Image (cartoon, rainbow, N blue to C red):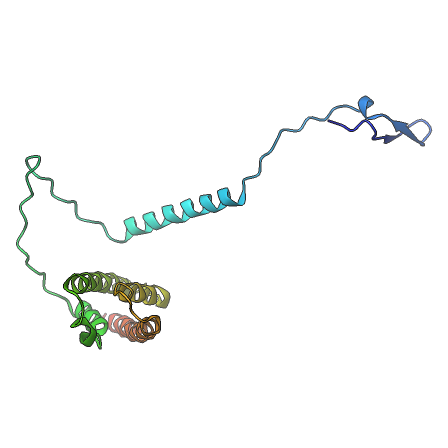
Length: 187
């Protein structure tokens, strides 16, 4: 609502002077109420966009094999015998770099922690090998993956994690560089 004590001035075209006009005589201007999104809503929208982009990236990177459905409900699917595919040289080299100097600590883990640590290490090695093969291995990605893997160990020293991740990142970047050079030499 307009304030009753407000006085507006208009310029008269006939005499060119300012003359006072009351607010009631002015034409009403209607504006549509516009709500601006709050900072929280903007953050939520940005987070949803980031998550959607990550899902697309994960989908595009590696297709997952569909899980076999059990023939009869309640029946467990028959497990395939655990036959390891022959490892390639690059995967072995990545695993060797990741394992280097960690064998001493690995012996003192509780069996559950040791199994989780080894499984996560194999997963990280596969991810890094795939990135190196595609020539898309970025230092930040490598460092983050190794750091995340090392932090699966409970009560691990953060400085040790950072130092070890840095050393292994440098070694893997050198391996990636050698792999690129090797690919470029082969006609």
